[in-house]
Length: 132
View (tube, one colour):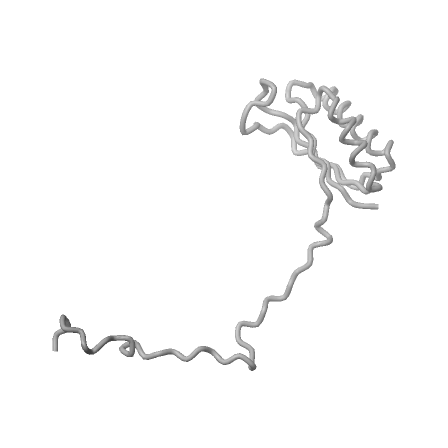
């Protein structure tokens, strides 16, 4: 089973009961396709950066769950036709899979640092404009 995160933006025109009803439908949809919900974060009503379907705000919710690899396609196809869901995004939650790579050593013993040339070594002494 893979871990997923579903971001759901519900219409800002709905009252509290209707909003909770839409979220319950989304949760039931996840469980219907074998998903096990681990966490639900409700961020509340937020203003959009631009108007979406003549609305200026919506309720943001994030649902983390585990499901089989076939479940996201089924969930997305059902969410696409839900009227009260303005936007959604379902992604694989790969925070646990991120590896921290150790930084490469700057100078190793095998590599010697490049020798520096003196500052005046690059000047041309035969320059006619140079003052003597």
